[in-house]
Image (cartoon, rainbow, N blue to C red; front, side, top):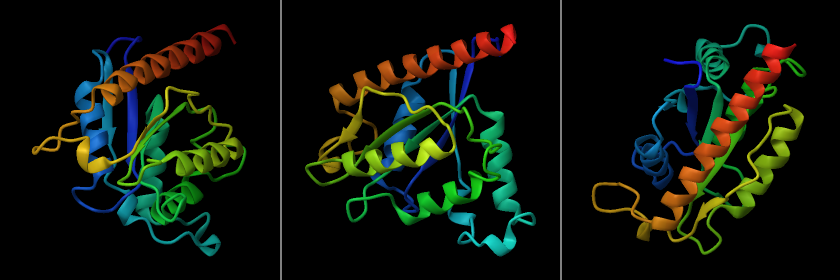
Length: 192
């Protein structure tokens, strides 16, 4: 792996095995440009409900997710929108990995948000809420292009591959922005 290579840690905001958003993140991983590797987490469903009594002695799944996020250059989150907001399982994961405050593995980690939903607004409201959540961990969220795909059932072929040309193009631009942000962060760290 060269110093220009970028590792992206993918998190799916749904536990359903063949969710639209798992298919979207798998498609994004296949579409990633050369030098960008996307690894999809399987830990979200293993995390217990957040409990402050366990802070400092977190379950192994929490420690593993923190280590995997820390090892990545960036995050890509593919999420549905439940009841107009962030799915509970995704919020729970961020409640765990956002600690300790001010020094979490999310601090300064660039984030790309993508999502699809059967509804006509796609995942616009959920992504808005997620942008606000990342203010607390000081994680820069890529400003666009937005991948908030409505009518999820029309966006994939029979084998679960993304067939939406606009979303495919936007993913390419989003990967470019993530790569540029990581490169700028590396340069800034080297100057310090």
